[in-house]
Length: 580
Image: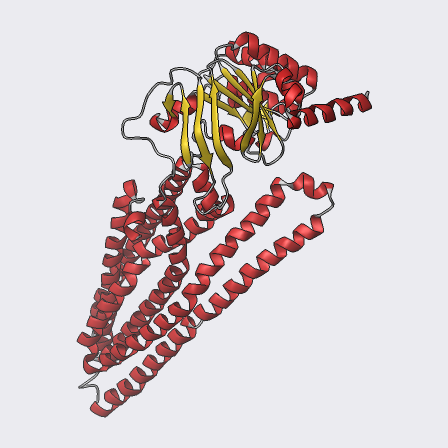
């Protein structure tokens, strides 16, 4: 795990190395200062001249300035290394998530991935910052101060050796108790983020059903669970401080008691005032180092679970990967489903799609209808390898989709999903998701095909109009038409419209389909729709039912023989008569 995380340091390795090196130099200086101070105290006790005092004072001043300089430089390099490490870690996580298939996303959940990219990275960054500075300073200070304490205090320094194992056992017991709680609390963090995400995304529904109070209660419950677990863990970790204070006071008491007796009993011959003052200083340095180590220990305990969760994402292999020698060109938009069955998880008991056999020639217009849960969307998601089939094969242009380079395949398949997504930025920027090099003329042409040009030109800034995050400042129908135009700019061999005209009126829907027939005849068009009018002029219509193909035919054929198609057609026509 540490090796995997260390790989994210990359260009900041020099700062990560310089920080502990300078820290160790700072420690050496700080440990020599009490030695020089002891010599000064002994010289004053012996009745030295002012020149001697000035000499030692100058040495101490220079050493203090050097120590300050080293501390500032170490802090600078530490900040550079830790912030750079966190930046690279977030980048690697984000890039890794971009590679994930839908199956990988389903495994982790969106809220959990957000927690790992934010809270978990912040925890690991804090630990890294402590590791490259404090984690080197504390043990080095403790060892060096321990050596100097023996040099200055002799047998009196053994008291420090007794304290260390007592503290070590205490810290181990604290960690053993706290770690399982932190493992549990981060899962609850995911639930908390999920509650927030659902509430914000569904805010219109929450307000429409006046469910603010219920959502607040749900959030409070999730927040309370996180707070209780953290409180329990923090109470355990809080034992570190009183344990440290106890050891510190015990050592000081023993040093002062026995040191004073030695000075008084021997008249300063076996143990003098300078040694006594130095030993007290080294004792404080040793115990402060131990306190720093306990703080590091606490932070590492908290961030260990965060690190594990981050590495879990970094080590996750996408369920969909390129073959060893991928095909680099899609011949045409023909489609073939050969005994295709699919389920979302290997553990799932039922297949979402079962034994699908289907052949679609390039350039055909195909309608797909069926009730909710009939797996219409699942069927088309297999074409661009958003998921891989569980059994059978899907072929595009005569080749199995698993034989293509994923990027090449997806560049030739444009999908306008049920949930249309626009990103914050201008209309032009959103359209260029389809083709980053598209000219204004190409964008205008695509928007005319999607019946979007007229409403765009009604905006004061036209194609430079700013789209808010999620497209909240345009209507549902406008959003759908912009997404269709964006897909058309890809100039795909296969165009999939997943209920993408549900928010536009029937006249506009008909105009869009007419434009498709006339302007992109070579593109294979798959139209998932709820309205019969959206698919009735298709070359073939597929009726889905319970994950299977119930029937295939044109409008007239299905109307004469298929019960599901007849029922949908009759219910929609009756609805139209009543509205009239």
